[in-house]
Image: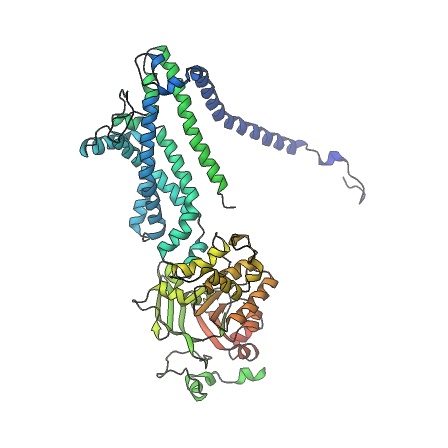
Length: 298
Length: 295
């Protein structure tokens, strides 16, 4: 092996042979294996999407959006469920933003760091994992029956609000933690109070992350079906909602409604409804992703 | 230097200081007072009396007794972990932000104990400002950085003038006057630190605390800040923590040397005029530190 000092070596000295070759083969193999596993999820989604689009694309037309539901598939449309979704989600946003942000600020900035706080935080992360139908049962008992709101937009919004509150608070907490401690110290050292520091420095810094969290939570709420069925939104609505006390239905419930009907035409309607719903949810997620990138603190 | 070792430590007791006519002599003799203490002749901006400081159950500082003279630069030096930054943060109650800390003794400002239960830390920090080791300008414009502190403290005057005056005093005006809307974060490290000094000055404090203000900066920026300090001294009392002994020797009028013993708490070993500390230290440990034998 010893060549003269300074003399060029033969390339075969540095080519993979024997055990190195074997180890490299394993490494390459693992790379493709992992790629295949990742693609599995993507392909499933793409396959579903293509299937839905093929089924429902032809049904998308102006009258599909302006028709109320009907016994006849070709006369049925998304109008009332679309309006209902907008009302419900609008009210959810109005309620969840102040409550979630306020809770997150209290936990991260003002609450005394004691055992009680740990219990609160533990509860919060547990609640984030509770199945949505449980929130539906809770909503039925408290909002529909006990408080007497009936199966109204108000009851539906409050139920969804409770459902998405834990995840929104947690996302807001994360956003608040991204603001560096040095900024807070700099503010306090100038003689600012804790609230002034939060208002002028922490909130503006955490806002993009908080908005992203809210958008993602709303996307989740937009697709919620079980909880709203529990509070009574699985119903035939042939009017436009004009007040939060109205009965209502939402897009995912309407889609579900169509899928359990026997007529073939309704399956097309359901597929078309899914295309609309997915477009809405995906655009929310897309907006959240863009916001996150734009305000990333590098 | 041979006579240092022969000179008895008793020379610098309270009696000796009284004989030498220091105006800051206390009426009652202090028990437990360490040798090599010194009371500056100038009136004191802050006086620390019998101060012990604890992080939870761990004692970080013991028996600190010293006065910081008005409109002078006092440096706190010592090896890492000796408690000098802790001491500095006690002076404007920044340690209150850390849960579980507590302080025995007192720190007096104009005769008022800063740690009296009736005293509000926000009021304290208006009068005693702080500049941190790593420059931390707000992610806002230069203009808004400077005005923030003043605004929350009720400033109603002309903010344009305030900004110009503060930036001039911080030796930053010429470099940024063209674009005050630029983000504070877009400046160089040295400029950011001067911006932090400017926003500190805008609140009109009486005392400015600086916690190793140059350690994150290059030598040229460091020099600029040191020159700035000597200018600022005309209007403000400055107390600076530094691990750079040459800086302390260049810049300060008085120097205190702190050291943490084996028990873990820091104490003031020696305190006096900078010239004396560096040319004629009385404690062997001071001499060892200054000559680089440890630290």
